[in-house]
Length: 189
Ligand SMILES: [Zn+2]
Image (cartoon, rainbow, N blue to C red):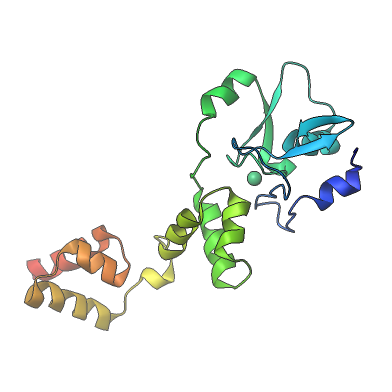
């Protein structure tokens, strides 16, 4: 059955934000590609999305995902490339996320805008990866800045109870280097 353009897009989990991935909602191959029956043929959903938005794919070129999520049908996440480059980038689905994407994930999750499962689909990574991102605060987040009381407590735990830098970093959810610099200041005083 042929799908019209409108039906095609109804099968894509489109977000208002062009920054997030738009996963194909229907059949996805083991390799992670969305499959659609289009113009009487089975086609890769992301390629169809590209063609609907930008027109025919020049011969000898392929559409590659800049987001690493092969099921993504967001044309803003695609670029034309030569097949060899795509091949080199293949393999397992990418778990890599940019700092900006990680920030979006945290904000959308903390703002109750999306579940971890939905985020995993939209960013083309595992739920486990999403959980890790949510649990990691960005380096420049205000949440990372400890209050004076917390710093005093952290130093006390280090001196009196001998907690390791790693233990303190986990407890206060700050980088180990942050703990190191705070502890070092005490030890120099
Ligand atoms: Zn994408």
